[in-house]
Length: 153
Image (cartoon, rainbow, N blue to C red):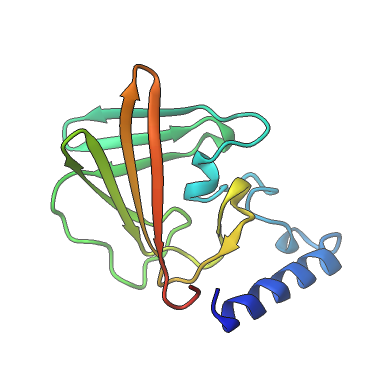
């Protein structure tokens, strides 16, 4: 992490712990059942690890059991959202590379995390997340992601 990211991470942790009883604003998005973030929704935790990946004409839907999130991933070359439109799970665009679904997302808010339950490493609004989903066996998918966020890493 960059020195600035280390400072921000420590500051957020300190503020959250000192004020978590004061208001909902000091609880994580996961605590408030809003989102676990993209990687937090995919990575396994103690329960609720189910993920469905469904494809229809022009779209893939990635639906997570915990918090019941669904991400719509367009597969066409449509333009991205404007840079001022930020979302918890970003603006996703997908394409196939052979048997691998590649999903590239931008336009994240800076208040989700990368890791279990969305409470992991912080990121900035500059985050570009690239995910790869490859079916290896019936019912098994190999998942990997790449974080590109020069502001934080």
